[in-house]
Every structure is written in structure tokens, then in C-alpha cells.
Image (tube, rainbow, N blue to C red; front, side, top):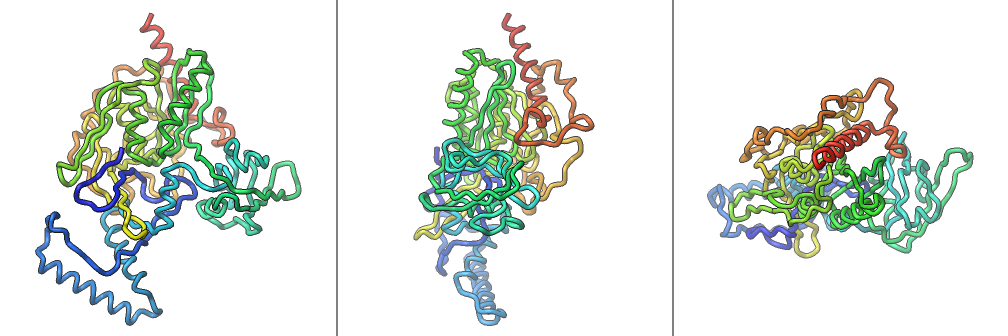
Length: 470
């Protein structure tokens, strides 16, 4: 579903992004785009300032523009000056408004579409190098025999040491049918391994699933691209088949999922809610506000659902979590979510000049809560590690500068107290025991404490459901 706001030009698509990239390899979005020097004022939009004041301020801008153009220590183009001015105008509003140049806009479209030219590797950064978490099935990386745990030390002969994860991913991506050479260090092998791979179109694997003990299905959703809902539905159908029609519970993992498309958030929440509101948005102009309701099909009717969340769960993840919590359809386990309760509309600029991201609305959960700056508190609080880990970036929306206010909602007290939590909840520890192993993405069942507790909770919910139905 696309949201079109009457007063804004161009093709509009409402997205819910954390601010910069929402997947490794997507570029951050600094100043860019080219609007030219003409400034117009649509008569349909009321101006708070009088027209004489507006012209006076534009004259001030012109004076500064000419002074910088003439006297800056190095020559600078008009294009750069105007781009920087436009970027400042947007980024000064809030942390999530900004400019994308044509390349950055294309990168964002690639992310939301869920396919790109590349190798098919899921990677992370470790000790200054790039570590392979997993190759995606039937991709160049998988066909070449690249293994989980492999360390990528160089790309096309250039070391990755000191290179950011985003830059490394960007170098591995590229046009299909072009080659890239990776230098790999593999455990147990003394000599470096060089692999020359031919890039192909990669369909981003946004959903991963597996069967846990006792026919408990685990589904991880990494981002809300165009593939989110169909991939989730396919994963659940596969789990049902594996369980022989006896799927006892489902764990939906939204940790570190920073969001994506609003329509996909609505669709995913609707997969577990039969009827009622999923989310509503309130814009500056009342006629632009909207509400989305469930489409009437719970794909696992009556099956217990646990949702894993943490401070990296933002935007679309919070829409889904908030809807499932308000409807008492799922029990949320983990830590407080990021707290991004605003909607950004992506507005492409004419002439292939990129796009702007403009905050155009706040969103509200079915109970009327605005989670802006607050986040969603899980029903069962369980930390990932025994001690809070230092954050290199903002841990929550409230840590950002210039965030929009939380207003217009019903407040946290609007949630009805949970009376359906199993008794086991009181026994679930809120942090791992002393000596619990460090998380290893290659061994999640042994090292993921939150997941372990989610399985305990899911088993109790399934047992409680069995007793009730009997």
C-alpha cells in the first residue's frame, strides 16, 4: 500500500527507516540532490511567516551564499553549496529527514525491493576484518564453497583492515556478470584462499526459519522489504509442513530489525491478527491521517506466539510488536525497543536528482499509544548479556538530537494489564547466569540467552493452551 499526501509533489512512498542504513551495505544518506536555484511557494500551503519576512530570509541566504562562493579558502561549486544548504534545511528538522543523491536513492530502492547484484554473503565485522556468518543458498558465494566462519581479509587484492562494514559490502556488490576476488582465511588452513566469483542478482533473504524442539517454529525477520510478508508466510507454511500439522508455538525474532516499508509492517501484523486496528498515522493535516486494519486471516490461528525484541527493533518492528501486544496476540520478550514513532515519506525529485526523506506523520498503536522516544516495553524483560554493553551509536530514539515530540497519544497506561501470562514468567531470569558463553551467530541455540528463554516461554504457552482446550 502506498501513501500519497496531497500537498507533496512526486511519487510518494511511506517508509519507516531508522535514519541511515537499515541493512549492511546500504549507504548512509548525507547531503545530496540538486534542486537548482529556483524557490517556489505553493499557494495551497499556508505559511507561518509573512511573505516579506520570507523574502528577507531568502535575501539573507543569498548574501551568505555569495560570500562563501567568493571567499571560501578553496573554490567550491554552486551545486555543492546548494546541496549542503538543502541538507541542512532537512537534517535540522529531525534525525530522520534528509537528502539522498541519485546513487543513495537507488541503493535505498534496492534495499526495499530486496534484490541486488552481489555474491550472496551475510557478513559481520570482527577484529578489523569481515567474518562470514552464512552464505545464502544457491548464490555465487555458496557455489564457491565459502563457509560460515571464514574471514575475508582482502577484496580485489586490497585489505579490508580499517574498512567499514558498509564499504566492504559495497565493494562486494556490483553489476551482475562482473567479477570480484576475495582473499579468505579459513580455520585449519595455513595459506590464504583466493576465490574469484561472478556476481549475480541476489534476492535478499529477509526471513530465516528453523524448527526448534517440541515443534516450536523459529522465524527471524531481518528487515521489512517488499519480500517480508510473502517470505514470512512461506516460512510459516514450511514450518507447518515440517511439524506435520502439529506446530505447537512460533517465535518471531524482530531483534535488530530496524524497519522498512509501512505496508509490509501492516501485512506482517495482519498475518497473526484476525480483526481490528494494526496502526494509525496522524499527519499535520487531518485529512492526511490514515488507519490500517487487519485483513482477516491469522495464518497460525490459536497457536501461541512469542516475539523477541531489543533496542535494535525499530519502526516497522515496533508497529508489529505494538499491534501484537495491544491485541494480546503475542507475548513480547527481550528489552525495550528503539522508540521511533515517526513516518518518513520518500519523495523522488524530478530529473533523476535523487529524493528527500521527510517526516510527515506520527504513528500510533491500536490502543492509541505513541511510542516516539519511549519504545515498547516487553511483557517479559530479558537482557541479552549479563552486563549492559557499550553502544557505538544511539541506543534509543531518545538519545538522538532534535527528535520530534511524543504527543497526541493515550500514553503507556492505555495498555490493559496482561492476565494471560503463564506462571513460568515469574521464573524466567532477566539476565544470563555468570559464565554464560558469548553470543556466537553460528551457535544460536547454545549462546543466545534470550532465545533460550523464548523457547521456555513458548513451551509453557503451548502447555497452557493444551490444558485450556482440554
